[in-house]
Image (cartoon, rainbow, N blue to C red):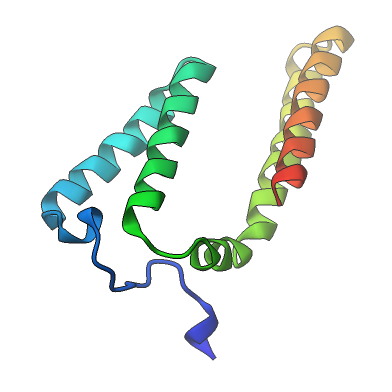
Length: 120
């Protein structure tokens, strides 16, 4: 039953990433997470995404295994932008009561939801 869940599961392979020191892998992962949260512009996010894609390619694990992992959390990936939009609209309505700001925020989050759906 739990064979379908692959999040965090180890896949043996002969790659540069698999041979690296575990402490270095943990440090690089933490640095990537911090960089993602501190990214102030789209270029920084693209660099993090590029680094992630490069890491995935270097592991020599089939792409099918990564997609199988994402299949388990696709609902979360869909509902986060939806909840963010609804909660953000409520905050803007309560605090700002400015329809132009609410409309602007709504358009930005609708675009985010559409992009998420395209990627699924």
